[in-house]
Image (cartoon, rainbow, N blue to C red; front, top):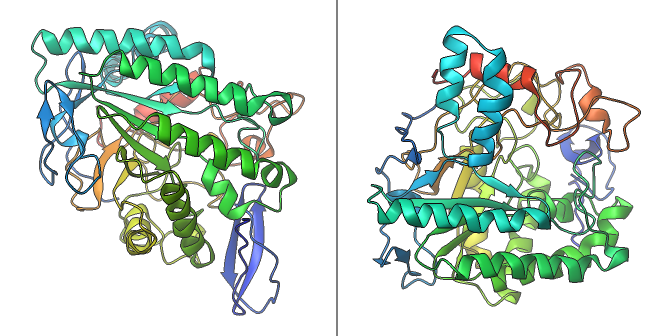
Length: 433
């Protein structure tokens, strides 16, 4: 059933970007359906990955290295006693594409970035076999005595008609061309890799932007056309990947997207409905927020670009969302992407400006020491330096956000290496490397 969102009488709907709509206070009476810090101490790093601080942790029952679901039916907090695998592909990008042109302190800092545990994106089916190579390496390192044990961290990101409200990250599958069947085969391939290594724990972030688009962007034709397929595909994913060595976090946008008063309840309802219809898979731990975004976890003064949204940072957002999720029957645990939120407030001209924002820096390193019992961990999901989208207006995947004044330019295609951006993140890192 479509999720229709309308603004209350004291609000009006504004579309500050094609994938970011919000209800703002004012005299306008439109009721159109809406469509789209304080940091903690960093964890220490090792050659194999990032060691997570262990305060504010949940207990994890482990047998042979494979965490079992707790008695509540929810997977425990894997971050509490694991280090995240340092993504070899991202590390190779840094060593081969970034470091050769860097000198002095920046070069040294870049070497440190390469050792930080960072999620690997399975954004095409062709990348799934690489997952097996990484899991085999993790298994070998754990057998050799890695302490704490290493876990895998991956982003499941290949929906048909992906990125339905924007253009920069359009995927390989089309709904019109057997996209749902192709996606299910992609999920089956991931499941085969995971079941081949049952003694390696893995965290999965499931489909960034997908469900958030169903909350706010059904007025966009591509999103409304994709609604049924998105729900079917995400349901299939969390059912098939419901394994004892897996913890899943569905993507929940960020404070500036689903945190608005008109969006937050419909978002909780949608998550609860999907989770319940999927049979409440035990491996679904909670939600991931701020993926590839820039928000602070906790900020003393709300920036001007957040005006109208009382949930102006991720801490406020998750604490407002959690009771609504509980009411909807969805597990209220969270992780947050801090890979690019080191500079606060940001230099965004509007909160919906998402593409290669200028002035950003690497944020707090992965840690389970978050200071909030709802927040399982701060993690690096977006590999900093991989481009958000091209600024070339003639490119097929050009999105106007990548040509805005607050977007670093010139920028290459999404997913390719953007050296100037990596330099910016390194220089502005907070805490510094």
